[in-house]
Image (cartoon, rainbow, N blue to C red; front, side):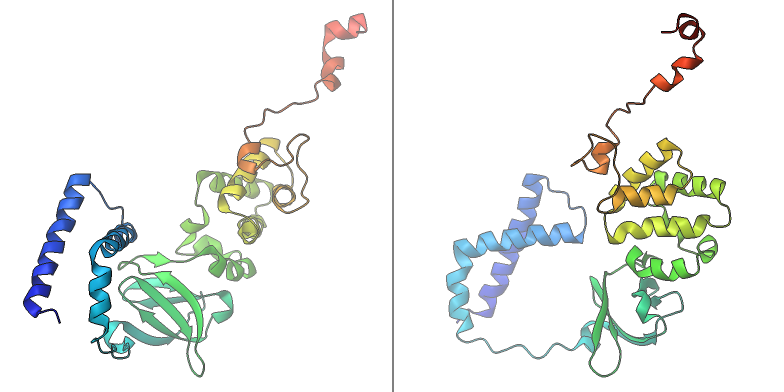
Length: 269
């Protein structure tokens, strides 16, 4: 059996090796996830070299761990979801699916993750979020869009409305909708980004670029036709993604304007 002093010495040795490896490679970690992936790879390589046979010996004398107690290791709170479908814990905001508005929820916030369960009886997992810092929020569009679509004018006053405009093209599309129909712009815009149920935000943004170029009188209907299966696309664009499609040169039919050119009218050509 390994002595306590040997274990502590090995921990110090490995800590020094980790520091040296980071310095030598010049590794800069983007976030905690990046660090954890790197550490996982490092530990797997080390295990293959040395620790696997040693750990096999240790497992013969190890006792099972006690049951995990979330009340000790995590921040746990029970509360109803608000009318906006949100939960506040540790001064951060997290959303639940639209169907869980007003439902009593049990929230378990660990160091890196927040899990929200339906409270009472057999707990049902409603949502999982990455842990956010104080003052931040995690509001996936699929959670909040159904509620906003039912009350589209609430979008104007909503505190987190900026998440509805992930790229400048989304704002431009909304402004065009307001020009065409000031009273229905919010509903049409929310229906447009709700197409994320069928495709990606990148595809929606590319589709909005195309629709704005055509100056359509019904932007949402044209966007839906482009994005949904079987939607109309310009000739020769089959098989292209919308991101590729916006790079295809336009080929307008100019012959219809020939009659407007005086020289052509006089010669009859």
